[in-house]
Length: 119
Image: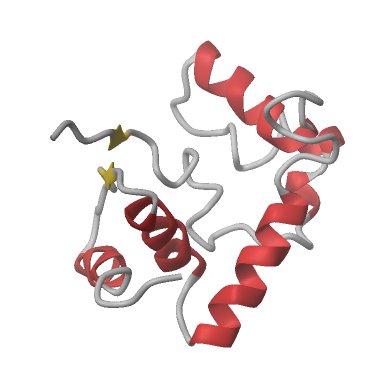
């Protein structure tokens, strides 16, 4: 069968747990000037991050990703997992193959924690 590859499974870092639902960086006012965009992001990526932070009323509800992060944080706490593990496990449970990046051994270990359980 054919499988779907999930590119950017962490939504450019938003679903790694680095940012929380309570952080002001996820508000619309800070979306373009926060640490979310102060890296080497392309114009296309910055536009996507703004859409994630603000919501577009279509594929991303008004209010952006903060409500989603809040729910993922609760799930992660209830299951003794990280937000990143919940994000990867969700993709796996939907039948797609995530392609997460890992810069460190700790990130690799965290990514492996998404395996062996189901949402």
